[in-house]
Length: 242
Image 1: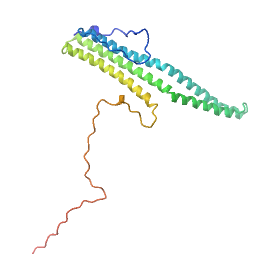
Image 2: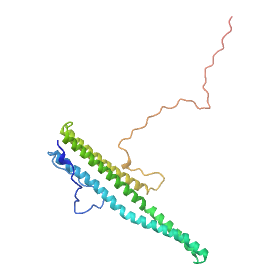
Image 3: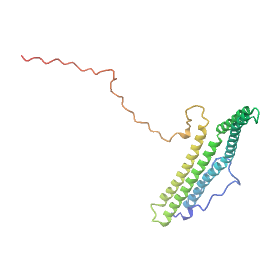
Image 4: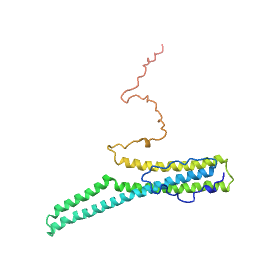
């Protein structure tokens, strides 16, 4: 099976005339597998479209978080500077009641930082940037892997049958799709942990591994407690020779 036409030519086109508002995903492309190369090309475009939509969603989501975080941090810096300068003006006699207003300004700086932390603006901004960059790096790796599979079929010699080549390509696409889903799931779990009510982290079904193996069961120790001594049977002393 040849794959030179299976390499995606460019970024996928946006559907439905606009951008999606949430990571709702897209329907899996179904069709006739009589032409495996065309079907693999459609699946590759579908996988790449999902990754680009994910990157676009995170980059758009970080915009308002970045603006809010910067506004609160600038406000905290200004109010903290004002709170530190007003008592000095009060000491020099330039401004009356400057100390009281300075305490109020410091309280405003603390309120700005607390609001930023409570709303998770800075942390959410950082998470969105990290997740978008991670998905982009994984998308670049997919493009090189897909090009490698295509070159392998063109330059040959072909390894195995056509079904094995198609299965190899599907494995590359499936592994990439699972990696992107894991990145999104990890970012969502970090977001949920920020709102946990107790000291223990949240445990959701999405974080449970596929298979868990019980640990080895250690045999019970047969050692006696340190305070007890082993009891040995008493032996009769040897009798003297007659």
